[in-house]
Amino acid sequence: MMNSNTVHLVDDDEAIRHSASFMLRHAGYTVKTYKDGVTFLDEVTPEDSGCVLLDVRMPVMDGLAVQKAMSTKGIAMPVVVLTGHGDVSVAVEAMKSGAIDFLEKPYEKSALLTAIENGFAAVRNRDSHDRRQQEAAALIAQLTPREKEVLERLVAGLTNKMIAEELDISHRTVEIHRANLMEKLEADSLSAALRIAFAAGLDEESPTA
Image 1 (cartoon, rainbow, N blue to C red):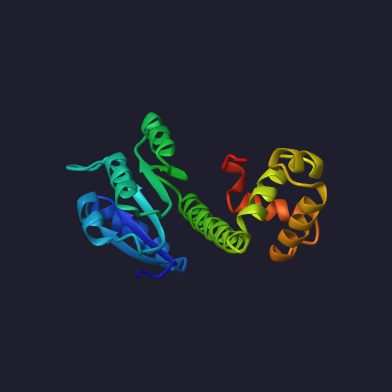
Image 2 (cartoon, one colour):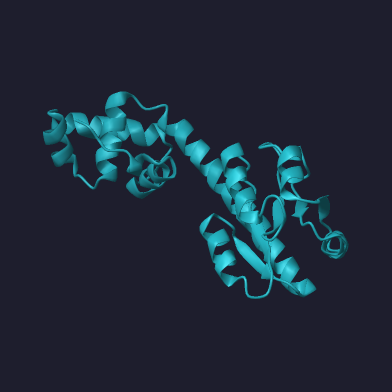
């Protein structure tokens, strides 16, 4: 697996590869260069980490095609695209395809470093989100089916009375299930329980009676 501080520089222009690599290494990044998109896709795996600096105008396979191939192969690294002057429409298309930023050539060192830092910030945010999601899912997995049904309805905004009517159980039974699920989720308030449910994606599921 690549160092998480690695910038994957994909550009068919040797001069760009040389100058950008120099600036990035001087700023403390590890840089891996690729002469074209095909080489990049051949060498990188879904387990690799870092940020991709990707030229959109390359022979054989352009940057947009590389982005699509990355998605197909499960390569989830953030992408910063390099565009030529006047390639705004291409940059917009790249952003629609998931690029987090773009740089127009020729670029200043400060602009390059800012774009790359934005890329690594996206990595950190995603990693943090993934950890929260995994932790929340593990907590939710401890619930019994009935406790999960109660939680789903709390997420939907139902009161204890409404939950009791919908599930055809007593109000007291709902209170017991609610107390049990709160304990299992280690939640000291309804808002804390809801945050865990949201992090686990429970709000995207449709509750069923």
